[in-house]
Image: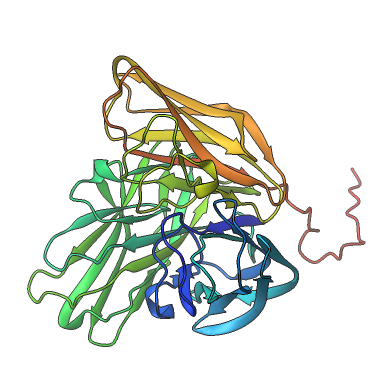
Length: 402
């Protein structure tokens, strides 16, 4: 089962030698350890694509490379000076569960913003990898909530950052990485919340040497429309050491081979007629120019089952419409939220996304709705390759005699 992994925010540019999370988008970081994300399942990474945003080109060669556990891999491409895109459709890299992943950039030209993506194929079917980047510095004295499947800062209430599940399914096999150990007698606890309540999926990292943990024992069932967050709790006795961020990788099994949930949006104010990154959330405001936020598809896939969640209802007689954009045009995958509703969905329309398509989210207001802070979830679908049953080679057939 293949899936797109899409990264690259619209508000920070890399300095030479910096790193970016493999999924979502945040500030570029000076070290691998503060930007890496744990893989929740083994598989293959391939089909790297890079696109310069804002309709610009680079004025020096810019090389992007997948790093695993702090080491460079063969999945790499260079945007040559004077160009705006590059790809690596040749090399394939093996990934193991709990490997730490990040993009590395080697570039010394003028400030540029980049969209980065690759294809990931888990070793097991129905094992869609979902990544969350808990940004902005973990609070060492207060409990906070973070968006599921996105990059975002912690907030004091689950309603501020909840991500809507776009499908029924099971969330499981969660891995957490932090760049700084909690310290002697201290700990961090990470728990998946569903509809404002804790679930059994929880990970505690403690002591002065551990920087990772996992829960591969507890599975959590979800239904389409359920609101998901990560709850982070510092130890109450001895406060943990200051920690720049945390990264979480988990599996979301929809029960349908080929379907992978993807998420976007975050606690940022939407503006009428503006655009946002479609995948992974961010830490900055919507933008008036679509080229500022475009993200690039690493392979062809379908998008469907769009769910929108808002912190506030638009208000009586008012509405907001959220539309997936593909190569600068509106698609049929759109949701309008009106009056007293705080969410909506579109489970009827499907968008066929071509390889290297440029994607974004657009919002339009009717009336003057209450301030809008959106999150969304949708399904990316890629037709399974039709591998033969276990024990059979590709050329063999099963003949049933009744």
